[in-house]
Length: 367
Image (cartoon, rainbow, N blue to C red):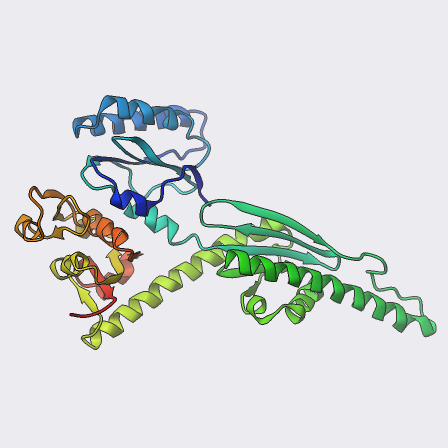
């Protein structure tokens, strides 16, 4: 999950005035000289930013973040403007490519690409006495709790004779009572946190009791993992993979919906010019951008307002802008979408043929 030091949202940055420093610095490595390698990468990135016109005092504010970035994660993300550092986050995965740019529009898509795979999730490791619960939220915060029930006569005994069934039934009753306590607490957390999935592991019988006792809004979210995942730490690791698969499935489902709308000539558009035009009219519900730099780095233009966008400066002038600036298509479209309250989805390159020209949108309404 992520670690956030400065809590400015990407939506807030979409409304901010530029220019912006956008830094995605590779801080990965396991060798003894990793810190030195990170320092060298930052020096090279700082030179590029300075060459682009970034103020030295702003770069001075960013530098301390780079010196302590290892070993907190494998990517340091810094977004800054004239007011200072607006976002500083450490991500656990190395960046597919480093970014260090200073320009009129913030480069938000790599961060959004990471965030779209960070769904809220509950992890449960349960046994006959209760459960350990971990709630993981997309902002990186975690909540850890223990639910402990009655332990008396919790183990089935085998005394023989007439008492055997009585002891076994008492154990079953305790297990069920403890499962009810866990299910009740899970219901509270589901109502509070709205998780996408509950990853559960542990004693097979305890898991079954939990399923039986959970209300439907909890039971419908349960995803059981067994095998080596019988502790919360191991289950959390497995939960990360479960969430990633769900997030990828969400993107694929959205692409399918986009294709259906296009097939009906209904609430969808594709291509740079048409998509930017719908962004300018605040029609977009979901913006789709294919993860391909060759497509997203094509030039586009923007005005002072985020909704003043187009593929040419003349198109932006027609929207009332007096001095359009040139920026990458992906950045211009992302800022306009976020400022207009639209969702932004990064589409993997293997689905590129489903989104013509690398950019498209599902619309709120048609004109």
